[in-house]
Image (tube, rainbow, N blue to C red; front, side, top):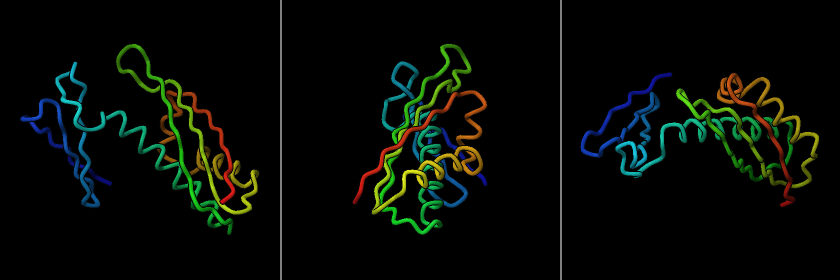
Length: 140
């Protein structure tokens, strides 16, 4: 896996990342740090990537279990340390999983498997942050 990040000097503190798969991601800093608030902060992209990683796992695990999953949303809230390096210290993930006849135990197990075995991002962040999860089911 690789990624190349380029600073865009004309933007203040804007950056563009090109991923190894050929996609682009724009990031920017807060105005008080020289940015123009034109894109997500780098740490927001870390948090979004973590949410995407675990949502991917949950959907895949449920599909492999032949469950009729039709939607998965993860609301992620994080707290950071007050001092540098300002790592994440607490992360709360709330999953809203929709489908037809989804057993709560299967959803709970999929979330646990993601956080204990499969989601590299959340497992890595758990080294500095206390991660808690919750979920709700929507029959659709």
